[in-house]
Image: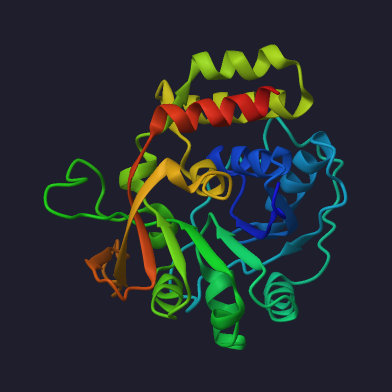
Length: 301
């Protein structure tokens, strides 16, 4: 097997269960080596505590976690918080053990390992944007930035979906910095991730394994389904992680992506324009059955 992909996972773990599931997939996949985890947006202390708990349950206590930026880039937008973050997993005794600041860590790690580090951004892009603004050379030294975010509308694609995706909407100015930076990006958008869903059947499979990590995942997924009053939920972030295992899961096209932002609510539309010289490989379709099988097989075995 070739050397594993060295990643920094930048996450707003705690609200939607897909962040926790993405972390679990990264933890157990030999194709991936987690250099560190950075938390972003809102109560990053709680996010860090939750990430630490999941690492402990998965036997990966050695992975460092770094608290990131709580607010938006321009301090001009309210921070959304579901209110149930960590419930059912955290018991209140966990300590926040941030190893430092996320931005310092991102810049230092990428600049010290040119061409070796992939940033996997599965939350708002504030940490990544500030890292680029602090040290613009990271755009030439990062191996790739995989972003779960945005929506691509080409022709009649994704007309049934919201025009603006959550991670981009939370901090569109930060997203604009990242997408316009020229860094090599793979964009895993809502129009693709909404095709990969799990529900009660998959929850039962996780419970049946008896593994502590899977039981925690089953708990947060179940609580989320009650919160959104639906019987299934999309695995947005795990798909972004899965591309480090098998990029043939998706079909992509090179594009240039512009993020629209203004003072209206909401803003953050991702406008994708096909371009051979574009810096963004935009995912357009996914083999959803193969992805779900990969995810469940990894978690089960």
